[in-house]
Image 1 (cartoon, one colour):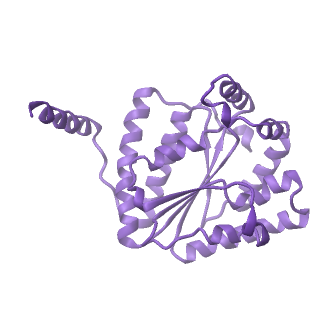
Image 2: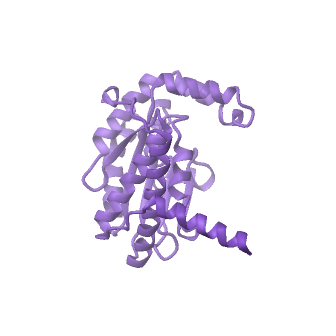
Image 3: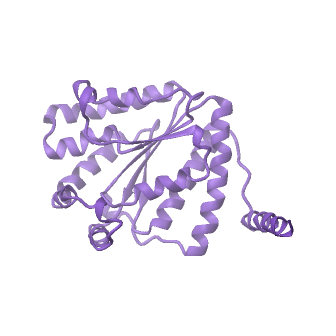
Length: 262
């Protein structure tokens, strides 16, 4: 399935800037509607190492009220998290809409059917059972009124290698590249099989997956923002104002002009 994804999709710089600002402003308006309607949006990010998840999250949150969202970077379970069922650490991070309206998981409960499956951190019976457990978990979120958006950010093996090499040769990015990244890359085929099983078995009417073509980061960011705007508009029965970029630019110019006169 993943081999059929068109990774040549891209946007020009001009298209990217115009679309991104427009969708960011619409998303900010919809985030306020989440607050007003007392709803919660749960965003799940999964994808290959170096697929651009961090930069994508940054663009999604850039114009949101920082009081209304929280990002959870998920690593291997440790401490108390390690002594409970694998879903427990995610349950306890869910917050009511009067605290946070947008909850973003950078990696998630899907580690059970990917990393833990491929690396042998759980038994075959456990990761096979997890598909049903995860679907039921997400169904419960929906029944409680939460909205779930799940993104798999997909890049090609050659693109990942180019990004790894770029990190290695760039001093301020070198810290991002670890021996584990190279080790995971050597298991590309095993992870591909696990990802395809995950997408097929956990894309439901309640919480469908969106595959994001990520070879072009600009295209990936805009597609994610557009998907969120369309999803929230539908779920909240609210159509945000379409941002006119020329007017936004004019307004900023006017403010600068007034400051200059003073």
